[in-house]
Image 1 (tube, rainbow, N blue to C red):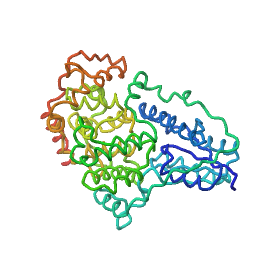
Image 2 (cartoon, rainbow, N blue to C red):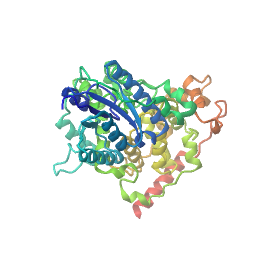
Image 3 (cartoon, helix red, strand yellow):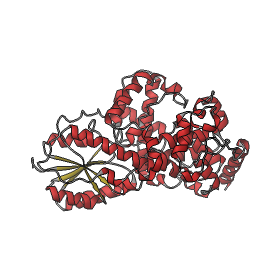
Image 4 (cartoon, one colour):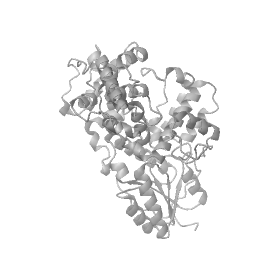
Length: 468
């Protein structure tokens, strides 16, 4: 019916551009009721991601307002909230963009079944990934388990063109009540760290678009050669915006597609890697919380403990490791090369289970993505699909010499190593809990373990697993 409202449930798709659900809804000419719900998927994630999601919601609400629409905020389990809202406004249906983590799939499946049983239209749409996880398969119809053939198949298949933003969004005659975003206190767990993160976040659809334009104009040509050097401004930073759907992956893909050179190709490969992670999470959901390779269940991982706590606090005595962990705490992100070094040190030199690191990243990253986080940790640990072999152990010292030769990155984030610490190094001590008792004038800690000793211990444990 042309005058029956549609409820558009926004989650990690907080944009107008290249939005299949929104474009299809606007094309119907029906009144549209955008809604965001603070359910478990929002309130139970890590502190930094929860804070950042709240900022994304606020920005998207302003963007809708500028279009003559608005974003209705409700809190609670999605099913009863949406049923109640649909009955309140006399909606004809509820639409949303698909997500592929196990919780979202189960929740959305139950929701679709219940809505349809009660006479409401229920539709889900693509938009969170380049292609749907079931659209790229081997010749036998099986999901890919290795990245390179996945990349080749995705490239050969191609990616659908992005859609323009809708020109108009028809508003309902009467708007239902909306909750107060500030009252949700999504940033409460950040405590005094929230203002520090706020100085580094790039929030909203317009900011994401400008970020992409700047990267393609000034950095993409040298992306392949410079992306591993953390002190350089060489990467796009778009993982933060992709996480909350402030920009669509298809828009990024097609913006880079016409560009010549290996830099643009490698950039698109990183987008494909993100899709690969979601592809694996969809087909093999145990990726998120269990060893992909079951034989690793018998590996001699250490559980959480004092060494892991020193690692979390950026006090390992390995400057490149500590700089990465402090960068994450101050900015909400960590350079990708450093993520690998940091993860390798925890899982191999300290022999600590990758889930300890996965949980800490989930709490501290503003670009946290369940699929990419799990895929990255299992790849480095050696327990995952298409993983780096366990005997590939990143040496923090030689990695620092190669990728941060002059120590610029390390001194940027470690106050104890700089004569005159800069704002990022000092911000770490402003952001961490006071209970940690950290002092920027304290001496830098000694190494927890010799690098050669840690390597040999890890290799011996791997040999024992292989023998068993």
